Image (cartoon, rainbow, N blue to C red; front, side, top):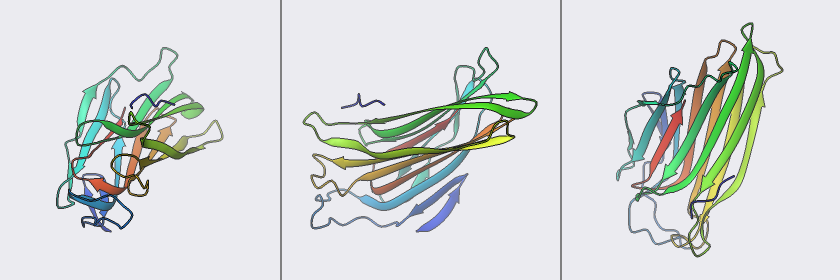
Amino acid sequence: MRKRRGLVAIVLVGLLVATSGTPAAAAPDGPAVTEKICTDVRLDATLPAPPDGMTTQQSITVDENCVVRAGAVRLLPAPSSREMSGDRRLRVWSQMYDCCGILMNALYATHMWSTADGRISRVDTAVDTDWNREPWGGGWYLAQSWQAGGCDRPCPGAHLEQHAEFGYRGIFDVTGTWYHNTHDLGVTLTGDGTAACELRVTVRHWFVGWTWIRGCG
């Protein structure tokens, strides 16, 4: 685990968006709101695993009218996903950045799986989280995390899920009740070596200028 860095729904190219579509007003016990903030934002997306030697990545923002703006899905070069042993490797990530490009919180998963005779014979998953702390002791923190799924091997396919929730208490909200980001990852691995990624982020208050970056590969 790393800590090194101090409902109208629409479909957008595989992106499911649920948001109140309204700016938030400051609660009596919450921070003073001087910029547009969107409440109860949930973004769901699926990405197929890209060809070997590539990753798929997309950035998502929410504008001042609480409208989701999805960037183009990009294929980026990456090391081969095939190990010398023949095992396959798949990495999935969900990252939230603030308006200054600082990583606030993130969830990562790396899956390794072996296949034989069209079935999965072994699955190993490594999960990592990251969050930003402020120099004076405040900032984001990991509230809870879990993972689930798998299969009774050998099996034709396996579905695995990872979940992480992050709270915030610091200079932008001393109450610790205003900001809460939840990341969910899901992958489906198959015995023929293919895979698909599912990603979701749920944000209690989305500050305009934040960016969600999601990736698979």
